[in-house]
Length: 297
Image 1 (cartoon, helix red, strand yellow):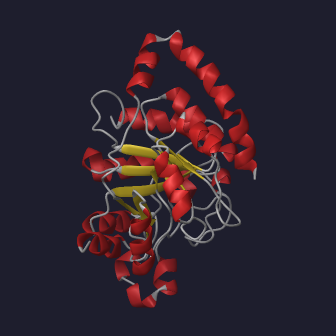
Image 2 (cartoon, rainbow, N blue to C red; image 1 turned 90 degrees about the horizontal axis):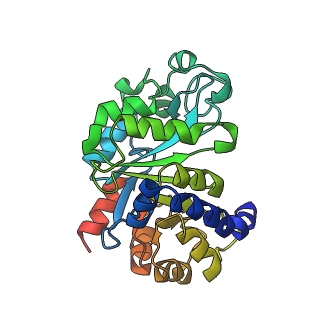
């Protein structure tokens, strides 16, 4: 697995970073403080918004996520041809709009012409609403403008190898909206990625931002103590598919002081089991169900 290959040299990269920090008092101080998150708070992360109830990565989905007691709005990032970060899971617009093609080949103006809601009404007629037709794809800045600093955001850098400069642009937008820095509330923003390189870049750009390492497994998940410790050098948690992990995996991650946020859990029984295993949060398309599960425990 490419991820596991990368882990072997992450410690060396971090050693270089530590040398950089040692010559920069500001960065060194920020690194010593380190990002953190209360491990006793079980996070209810609205996956692509409340995407079981509304078109994913649209303002109505994010609004429902908050109304259904989601702790974080999850935002997948892609970047347009003209360098704007937008909320979309796929590299292509085909699945969630009426358009076709790669995001990287389209300008924001072209993206804004697409209908990002009608597909949901057609796919889920029992949850269809007339107002979903004609919804537009939001930019990251538009999401921040809509929900402000009162909301919390769990942001993923998707396919960062496809989008040079994605991390720098993300940090710029976060700073513009005062989501990071000394005056930002604790853990206002979490950044996750399947790419260790992307997270290491984020860590170098601003070591105060909490990071979560996503890992994809094609078979039952196994992780070594050394791998967990390497991840701990730059991240506060790990995310993996709930279908691949078991209680031993969760306990190992937690035993090393990292958070464990599996994805994407939509069934009440699965939620109960994962909470019994000791996870510290999970992604769900139905934050209302997870809220109900946690309320009754």
